[in-house]
Image (tube, rainbow, N blue to C red; front, top):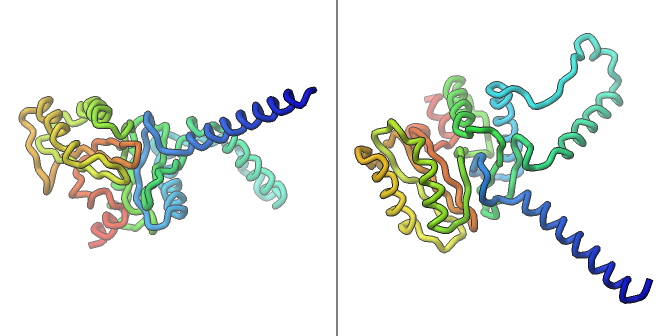
Length: 257
């Protein structure tokens, strides 16, 4: 092969390697068109682990386990340590082989310090967060140390006002039957202003529910709008103030009192 051909082949190879890396990186980053759980933490790595534990525990109860388990009753005594390790390694390989988009829970980078996002394939993130909070209140036990707030996110879009309002409009139907509401709007690492979002979003809610009242202290339902750099996370939550603003640690402390 000529020198020119070798150079072209090298360029093509470098291009495909770069494209593959970008695809893997984008799959692990927060972006539009997903749903899941927006969390705040004071130590990200440990918070991700705590989030996985909580979400998997309650998802298995509500939706059933995603693992393929064989009947090992009566066989445990026969398993050698090497066999158990081999089996564990094989399970890890199978899990890693599952595309990110098909995993029930997968941490993705937000690019914002103290904020992490767990993307999910579950149909209703609110159902899962409700179950977690109810369990904490019932047992009166703190289940996390580093994971603080956990908010269910039904949709994400670009951090553009038109996109935010369009996405919010599709979620407002979930507010049927409530008498009071609030808007929880936060903007991190972006030049969009809170006031630019609040006024038109409030108008959308009032247009669809003329009788609903604004209550900033103890609303029955709230629209969550969290702008994290180029991506906006949106969700509808209930009893935001009564549930300690969905701070799992504070919910446990409040239950103990």
